Image 1: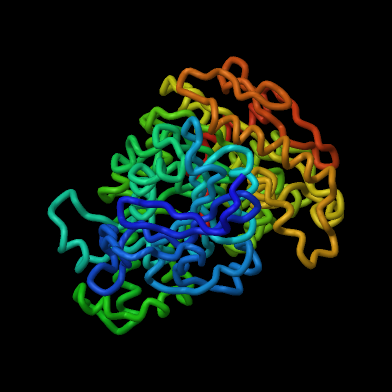
Image 2: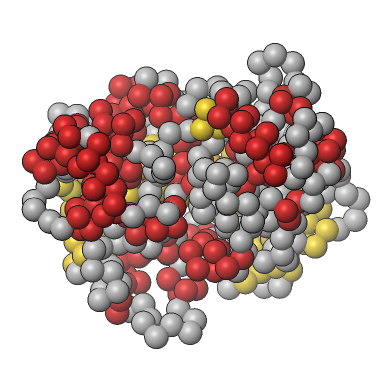
Length: 505
């Protein structure tokens, strides 16, 4: 038991003072790279200047510029203070001097690469840390600050060295910080699991494909990653020039671009806003992640991946109408329409659109990744989340919304009940404990040679001959069970149709 309300840690950059909360040591707002401001905007994250005095680590660091109302409505809460100076991370640890180093879990928040922060309530690391891991969350550059291409910036690099995915480089810098420092927090730098939801899950897939991330982590968990294609660099360059023109900077220099106030970017909307995907073709992500997985050339690390039963709930935030999408397929893709009618029972366009969008844009991604893992000779596990909290089932008639699994897998239901007129129940909390135990056991025990994850039900690694998917919940039932050949026919077909049908516009 920790008695002191403050705790000190010496890192490679300097000494930190954190706090102790319910026997968990918490360190907030730790800088993992230099502020990416001024001449460092749109550059690789630079090293932090070491500090000599004791640094307070009890307050959240700044988050990247974003739409606060959007984050409050869909991103998990209030992201706090905005600044271009946003490269900070947070650490929860149950023991800074354990008898054996503890597994490390690094959470990368979602939000379409435009909203979010590592300090939001659903991402609290305390519950999992109390069960024996060191948990890290981080902020990184969002929107145009995180993903940007322009000829004037490209000119600063030698051939083949161009960088456009600054957000992914931030995540890589945070993982380098983990390798340097996590042992001081009781963590095992040789057992690091990266995990994330939505664009956080897409980040994990991208890091599995980035040559710059190799060796910085040992396994990954991907929740609700979408199968939208990465943005080609030539398209990103055209968008960058259009953004510069919007600010009356046709033929802009790099200096002029860096002089644009950081807060002026996030309000930009389509077609000047970046999509919720990285840019393919730079030094960070030389080949699009979906292409890399289809070729089974991702890093050979164990992977868990899955999605929810009503992922289509997120479509409205992307400006996609499910019924209109079905109508478009009916008009423009006759063969696809016949296949869809064959695969799905009769339904109105809205219901059918939600199901098809869920499966093509989300469920199939898990199947593609699991197959790639098998082809690469490393284990992968596939899940499907279909549980809705007992007091809210009338609000979610189509199943688990995009993102609603997060407080279950991170066991943070208790931090999300304040002011709710539909509180989580004891049964909800028990189910969260059971689900999160799989995440913990993956981090604790899985190696490239593992064939099962332990839990309420033994979860076998995915294999095409068995095609085992672990189902978490059956809408009204807190059921955990293995399903064989889950949506197999749909997955086999949609894997081939993804490039044709998965588009935002």
